[in-house]
Amino acid sequence: MKILVTGGAGYIGSITAAMLMQEGHEVIILDNLETGHQETLDKIMRIAGEFDFIKVDLRDKPKLETALSQVEFDAVIHFAAYIEVGRSVQQPDAFLKNNFEGTKNLVEVITDKGVRKFIFSSTAAVYGHPDQVPIPETAKLKPINPYGESKVKVEKMLQKYADQGKLDSLRLRYFNPAGSYNGQLGELHEPETHLIPLIFKAGKGERDKLFIFGDDYNTKDGTPIRDYIHIMDLVDAHIVALNYLMNKSGSDVFNIGTGKGYTVKEVFETAKQVTGMDIPFEIVERREGDSIELVADPTKINAVLGWQAKYNLHDIIQSAWDFERQK
Image (cartoon, rainbow, N blue to C red; front, top):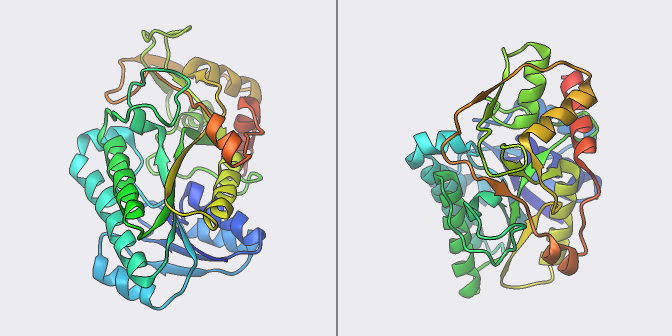
């Protein structure tokens, strides 16, 4: 198949593109390089070979139409989005425009071309403060930050397109991706906001200390709980989902997680074990927009797609550390 991967110069998109190519698919990467990196594209080529690249911003619909009019593809895996929860609270309009309106432009353009298969990168942030944990896909959507709200708006739009028979889609709600592809492709966010890379930076002296946002939550050690998913498990889930979608119609949703949660302090202690570093930290006030506990119920994806996570927290942090050291 020929697959359009948006946001393919970013963390998850780049590894997905590389793995698709290694599975024998043709890949077109679309990215505006606002947060993605040319060096990441270069690494994909060294790892997996040649691919087509389109530099265009999804918010510019006329340019997007022109760019996609010149290529044919069978399906889209859509990663391109702003992802920082804290920034979304400060700049809600920017998140709505980029994450929702950019996606709306993309969907309109591809459906006009007759492309019917679409996989959407959603998030556990759609659940907000969930009523039950682990969280099933049937849980009420009640995001507590503009990032989560932007993803909910896209999910609802995709369901409407499916109901109208215009587009078949899967919405994949993932929890906390981390780790690397064989130490070669990993997290390169600017600014970095994800916990595990920040722990490494504090340990290496690239920042003064790690800030832990709140230790007064109702958890076993007072810090928030998250379900961490190895990037290779996450990418594998996308490839399994793509194969499933090619023979299905309508729209469906799946959580991608392990079903096991870890506190911030547990992640911190595991990182200290993996790296052997003494990592300075400071407890500070809670961060606006953070949920107490987000852990997936992966029962549905296990049963319907036959997918299951293979890696544990130690594996994830070791993989991330392998990337950090070569970086």
